[in-house]
Length: 234
Image (tube, rainbow, N blue to C red; front, side):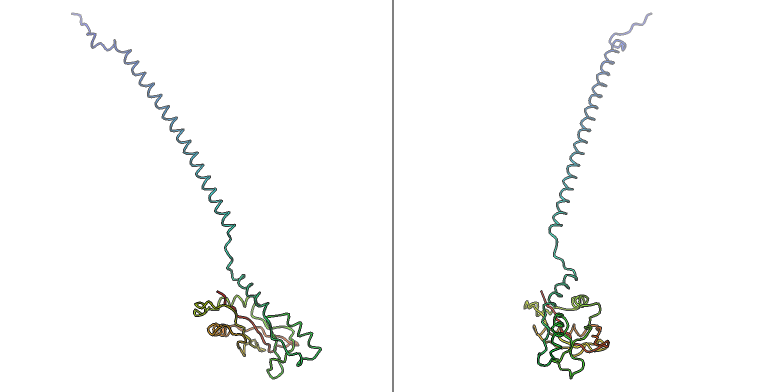
């Protein structure tokens, strides 16, 4: 008996249909993949462009901030600048002037030359401790390291009295003292007062000073008067 195939279950008859359907599905999938890759590439390129723009904008902002910082330089507060200001004030100080009647005529020219140095006033090292009798010394006394180091030392050790700060008191206290032949400070006194608390602080900080290099006269250490301002500025 011959076996006959049922046309409804014959797979060979539908083979081309399955092939075409599979081909369509594959092509559709391939096209979808291409579109997705293109969109992803476009998205990546857009992201990269956006990232570059952001980086550039941030870089520009940083540059702007740097330029602004250069233009808006803060006021210097270094010790050297403070010292220069105080040194300028020292240069404006008036030193005690001797009476012309007590000085021989041939010494007056030397006294005028000495007045050019407003920081130090040499005292008599031979006569009765009378401040009105002066003579010139060849080398003036010096704070260790010079005037600039002295101003730095004063800036580091001087304490502005709180009572004077509350009252907003500013100014300078003029102190006078003698540097003896060994470099020690003696006869410390105030010749121009500012305010009681400022005067006390000026005397306190002056008593803390280290030994000075003494003045030299005729090759020998001698006693010399020194007059300096102690500046109080808010």
